[in-house]
Image 1 (spheres, one colour):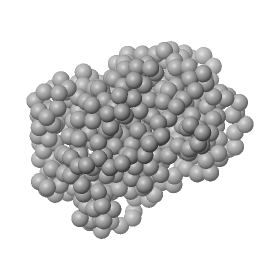
Image 2: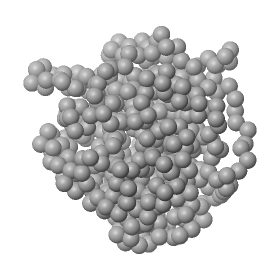
Image 3: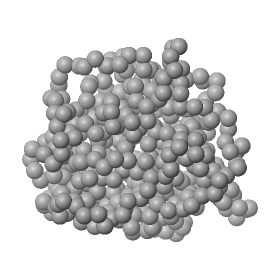
Length: 442
């Protein structure tokens, strides 16, 4: 864990990014829900939590039994008046770039609010949860919310391909247990249908885990079968597999590029499957990207094993842990073990242009102070000549100070990385069964 000194560089942060997370909706002040608080309360549109969450086995915990409702049910009453409005006159100017960088923004209060949240941080792309990532079922999207989302996408200038929705963390299509896999599949299919309701083209998800009950080969086969079946029940949305950090138990699917290649090989409609590369996951799994040579070598390995034509998005995260740590711990850009230079390679590589490049770094519930600064720095990396001056150090310091200020303002210190020596109740339990999510929340 890096230590930080108190910074006096807050003047580098534009005034527009200092606004409070308290917004006026109508005449009533409303505090925007954080990703963590939304997830804990179980509201639709919640963002990732730093809490540990169970994967697909409600029998082991009563935390998910309360949401065992059929996918098709009477629509519960939804809160009204939660639609967020933005003052366009104070929105940051979005950089025109072929590298479409953004962040995983909150959709609390309705998916339409995610569009405004993205615009407020100067994002050219964004990710969202289409429903609560901690519940198997959620209320259907309303027609008003769907129409508002589409209207705002056009109003704020976002294309459908610039959005990379993220699937529920509960989903495990590789589980050999038929009943549990069916439950995951239903949740997965519901997400895909929501994408198509909103006109979105991509859907990113974690492939799954063997849970120590079967072979990697068999889990891969089950994942591909689920994707094939889901493609039959939907029209056009592309299912985007995410590469994963490895784990000590070896149950995680997707930590090796060959896993992704084998899944894609078994998918019948190759036009509707792709990959999202997470920089932290790659690094934790042993794929080095810190130098230009290392980045090129890793991307060449991906191209040879999977194919660059399948690259449909990236998650941009620095790492709190060292290369090949087998641990998924996100850090703010440039101040972790990967370093800002690695992201300079990415933002000057034509092979990753025109795909969503999504931040999942800690925001300390102040995205306009943290993510906006990271987006600004990443955009400035494009075309930057590293032979002149010490620009990278200055940019790293800008991010470091923004993070420090956000920590202080939010009153929340950085999430302490938990040790890996804690005993588990079941042999083989790993990050796919009780995933320790970082505080990269809104």
